[in-house]
Image (tube, one colour):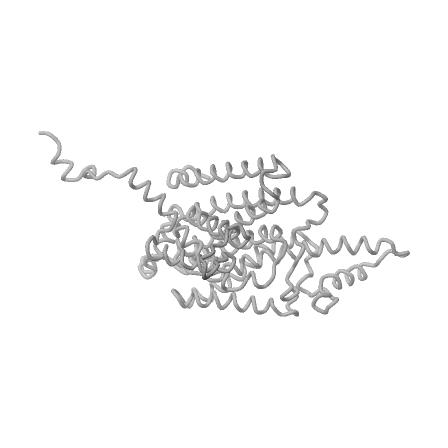
Amino acid sequence: MNKTLLASNRSVLIFLLVLAIFTVAVTLMAQATGFGLISTSFVKTLGKTLCLCIIAIAMDVVWGYCGILSLGHFAFFGIGGYAVGMWLMYARTEEIVAASLANQPLPATAQEVSDAIGTQIFGVVGSSELPALWMFAHSLPLQLLAVLIVPGLLALVFGWLAFRSRVTGVYLSILTQAMTLALSLYLFQNDSGLRGNNGLSGLQNIPGVSAGQDWVSVWFFWASALALALAYILFAFVTSGKMGSVIRAIRDDESRVRFLGYHVETYKLFVFTLTAMVAGVAGALYYPQAGIINPAEIAPIASIYLAVWVAIGGRGRLYGAVIGATFVSLLSSWFTGGGAPAINLGFYKIVWTDWWLVLLGFSFVAVTLFFPQGIGGLFDYVAVKRNANYGPDDGSWRAEEGKPE
């Protein structure tokens, strides 16, 4: 991280410091590494929240900075989850199969092991063979490459087709939503090769690791915090300097930027593809902590929620995206997990598990109407008020006239 980035965006250092303090605090309070003040399930919730912050930052860059309202970035998030989930499920099933076949008089052949793994994984959808899609599921390095390559390649092809046709605005948003819907509908089919509606489960069980979930939750929390820090630095670099100026100019007036000689489509394609790859990494870290992934996670509504988080936090500000994702994620866990007490009005009882989405919708409408800069805009307002100087600018005529003869 160079001095220019720090000088132009001091919020990077502030964010990294806050994230470091938060990580240390959670570590000291966790059951495995500290005083046991917070449960393992809550450590997982915090780790998942950090992953949601990563994809929120990616969404903020593509929408808040570049002006592309993508309603398909959760598809890239889900693809990353499926890629790492395939290895987790395969390797874990391989351990179980190897242990069950160890007592046979003759050692099992590689084909027998493969058939047994296929039956274990796909028996729930009436199959016993590993689809071709799983040909690299035995290799962790290859699946980790898929976490980056598959979302990046899908975004590259889709973006190239859309941007070269100069599709913009609401039409582009509809296209990204259609892409997400098509992918989720395909994954719902049992012959998709990814167990259809059942999805991939048992992802919290890490193959070859004998440590309990209390330790595993802390490890993934650390990995999520590190990934968030790196993503913040990466996107702070992308949105600063000349590139950042061009990206914001495309958001504000795409035609003028094209008239000035910049290849707008290249910039948009770069931002769209890069944010998709980062979203894939976030998904790869999220779903082992969630323990399961199914096609419902990739439904278009998830990407709409993502846009709501960024809007509530304040788009056009990286820290605003983090604030929005954290605020909504933790409140959602509290309301839907039974933490919020029900309100008895006498004639009706408000149960927040049923009314949480309504409350989220009202929050989005209220922010849009009354505070479009979002929660993150409060920091800008305080900074402006603190540094306000209502006198004449240096060098102005009023400043010159105010000087004594």
